[in-house]
Amino acid sequence: MTPDRRQFVASLAGVPLLFQFPRTAVAQRSAPPAGFSDPVLEQIIADLRELRSEVEADRAPRKQTLRAIETTLGIQAAHFSAHYDAHVRTALRRREARLGRAGLVQELLNGAHDRKQHDVTYQAIDAALTRLDERGVSGALRDVRQAIRNIRLNAPDGLQPAALRGMQFDYCSDLRWHIQLLETMVAIACSMALLEPGPFGEAACGALTLALGLLYAQRMFWC
Image (tube, rainbow, N blue to C red; front, side, top):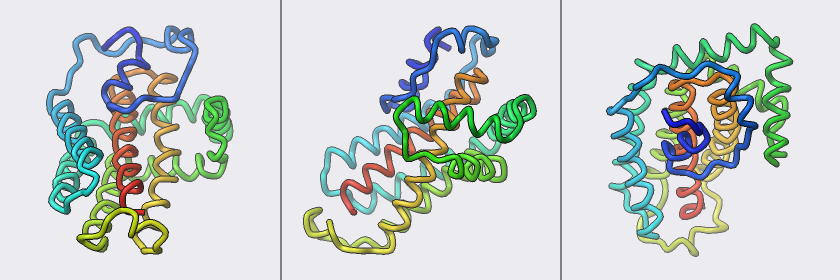
């Protein structure tokens, strides 16, 4: 792990983070295990970053690229379910036990508003916390996979982006809902990565941030 956790999390996701926290808040916590690494997750992240670059550079996303993203997200979700979800849940429950549910939600809401995320609400954070506790980060990744699958199966082939914009498709409404939910989950995960430092929270922040970037790329083209 690098000394600067904000830089580490941002590099893991490949997406610039807007979350800023005082370094003292990190320094007061214990460091993660020395030498921790997960080459499987690192390769999954690298593959997803490459696929996202293909979508952004091509400007005409091919359905086979979307299928590759789906497959890779499915692998990532299985990896998180087996190796990360339990640790993320434990960190969330530990902080909730310390602050109470209302205190935890308010702490995360204050952090979101400090970062100018004014669309994030108390109710959204509370609902996202429940969803993370019930389904884990792996569940969120499977949701992203399903949203992209809906686009692959329902979006028309052979149309230019200009012809698609402004048209109402069910998959666009579905995509917008997933983006709103994932934005809140990213705020939670990346806050927890700094409030309760450790490799598992950092991995959750990085994975969800990258997944959100994938959804943004789909919205840019298809909706």
